Amino acid sequence: MKFMLMMNAPRGTGDWGINKWTPEDFQNHIAFMHRFNAELRDAGELVSAEGLAMPGEAKVVRAANDGTPITDGVFPESKEFLAGYWIVQVDTADRAYALAAKVSAAPGHGGAPLNMPVEVRQVMQGPPSQDT
Image (cartoon, rainbow, N blue to C red; front, top):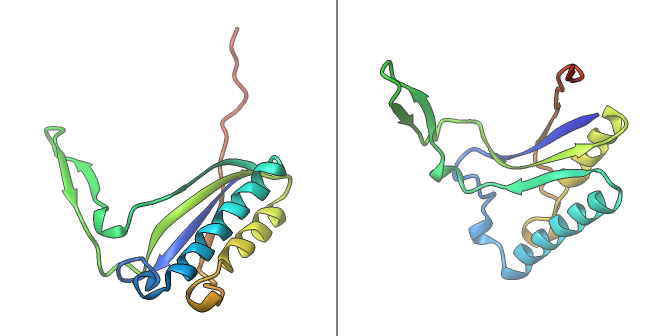
């Protein structure tokens, strides 16, 4: 089963106040993420993982009636922003939840766990191919 773990940053700039962290706090946070990714890779559970740019760079795009793009954003009223994601291949939903809880506790300022929200959603797959 594939699951997407979506790490959400709180309202505002989406940086968890990272500009107030010490360089050591930031390095510890990044090191935690690298270790987490390595653990997933070593367990054969990592499909992909990416961090995303700050929400100030985000745009929502839709097509106008003539097909040209219309952009909108940034949305400071949003409750939270998608900061990054992992796609994992695991045997059970409970395993995906355990992984989400682990990454939720990534260290922040002073090493305190961020306890950030991580949304977990199964990645749906279509029916088997009927190639003939």
